[in-house]
Length: 399
Image (cartoon, rainbow, N blue to C red; front, side, top):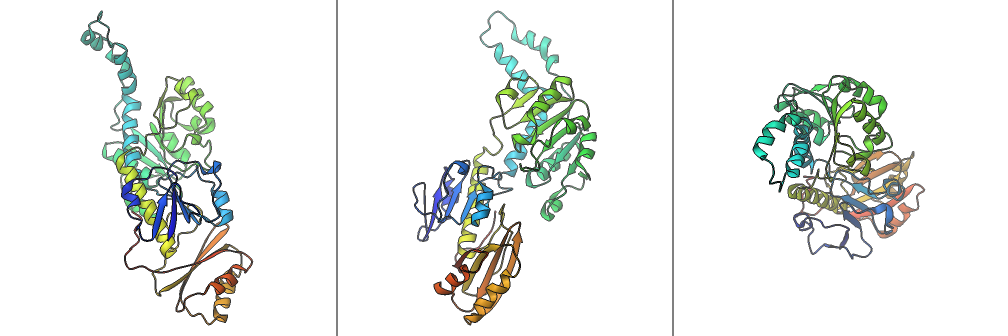
């Protein structure tokens, strides 16, 4: 029976996909095979030695120590695209809010509440010009990052009548197929910044993207541009954002990642990390995470891993061997030679690598004994060996 430790409240629609006769789930599960979480911070938690997989019901994964997981051969999954529509809708709303001064106007109206000494309708007519702002129609939106969310933002903004330019040097085939033909592809970020009235950031946070929107990049933007960040706070250098707002290089900064300094500035519209806060997104993320865990634990299939290669192989035999090893020469040769010495016939095999790790799915005609698995684990560079097999009652689908 597989043991799944849940560190956050996970939507029941997802948890119900774990068959009760083969899975035990809960916060108090001991020696878990896998951890399922949302926002729990694993940087502050000791990960049990029994764990071979961690799945985050969400796209971001900065709450998971990926480097440590890579060192230990733990597969880390996320669920890109499962909350894409929720984030897209909030981004589109932010475009309107950044233009029409909607939050400021509402805040001003609430300040008039319980004032019996004023004629509110007359005052509204007099003061509404304070909250005038441009329409989106015909303006240019630059989308940085054309993943699941960025593509949806670009397509919907184009449907609103905006001119849209996007940049993503690593755009996937699926994203490219989904992108509207009306969206123009740029060759560099700077090309996008120079022409855009609005810029929306949709890239993952990493050492390479930290502070990517800094004073140098802001200097390239059109004067008075509006910047939207619904990806991660660390993508924009806060001090440079505030300076740009004060000197007029930026008109508005809208973000889902508030800080005390940002809240102090009138040119910033902050929201309390609402991007994926819809019941639909929570369900979609939970369902996707559970399906990925089941596919990995039962079949060895890997999809949407942040530290392992994508690896899929249709089952051609009742017996399946899964091997995690360091990405060094002659590993496959050593594995297959040892299997051959035990008169194990391989019916199919796939080997993929990503960074320092490699992963093998090996289908065989014979069951692999515990002794053979132990022998494989003694090969220098092998991290983990386990067996899996097909089950007729479960078909893998990421979404």
